[in-house]
Image (cartoon, rainbow, N blue to C red; front, side, top):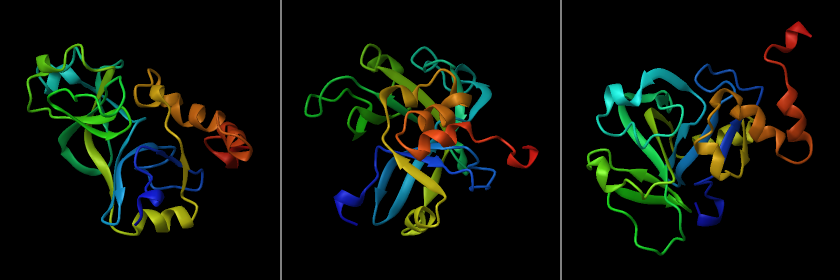
Amino acid sequence: MTPALSHTGRLLVATPLLTDPNFVRAVVLLLDHDAQGALGVVLNRPTPIEVAAVLDGWADLAGRPSVVFQGGPVALDSALAVAVVPGEPGQAEPLGWRRVHGAIGLVDLEAPPEVLVGELGGLRVFAGYAGWSPGQLENELAEGAWYVVDCEPGDIFCPEPERLWRSVLRRQRGPLAMLATYPDDPTLN
């Protein structure tokens, strides 16, 4: 896959036709997309588990709500953290943070949290992730399961994640904006 075809750093927004319970109305941030497949985290699946209950010291850096999010159906027993570091690429990156795309990066949760205090513009912790084998995401895109849209800074740390699917669609141009009003159960209309 050429870099021009990579969707790393963009959002996958589930179409109303996607009925897999793991991804119904999901908004996925793609952290990696290349010839080996794709990996991302679901941004709008908060759990009731507080970050402080599972990761000592990281709760103060986590955005609101300060809960662990279910990042996807794969490896639910592992955690990863996504954070934004303000500034331009090329500047010295803080210890414990690796740039993925633009200002978005992954945090090393094994590092002491105090090394990142004052460096992060926001942090979100995910249990598990969403993964696609080589060609799988491209097939799902061709089948119409996902819309690929640009990520905006507030998407990752949306304080009302249950509204993220509608708000991302609403800001799109053309027919996608209309889908924001798509009913939860169209058979009730």
